Image (cartoon, rainbow, N blue to C red):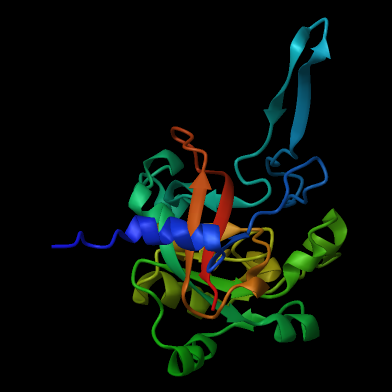
Length: 262
């Protein structure tokens, strides 16, 4: 009897041969990485900083290394349930089950709508219309929302896109955020913007509904994603690798997608 074909052997063979492509969904992390800006009365997240320890010199003749400083929610990052008050007492980023760090994903493309209106909001009807054409949202998987916002990630001002009325970035309506969190089988939401909520979400009811509903439902967020345009509408597998910070509310993460190519 011949041995049963190995799924892992087929995977590694596909990766070597190019039939499975690895797409990096992570924004490079540097001091220029945009960060969210809160009103001045609130605490602010830190930009990413490197502090050189030694670089082949008298501080360490044979090695180069750095300390770094960063907010948990700086750059491409993972939101854990305890990040929001609605998830108080729920899991931290170190307790995310590892099986959920590798999961299927679908991509819904709203880049044309966001280009026409930076305050564009995804409604439940948009997602249901997509499901009619592509099938249901993945059980235990990610809903990734493409808006083309990653093209702005090179600098703070165009990425945050704020004026005297606040930021103007696309996202989900409050009703859609609640529906995704409470009535769909996905484990979380991924976006290209600085946070999972729309720029105007401070004025929604509830305020910041994606955070409020997702975290309160024990679900997750991925933000500042790149290259969603290289993923198919269905069929990709996302590998999310946040730092397992004990008690942490989130962490910078390397996010990869596996895509099967013909």
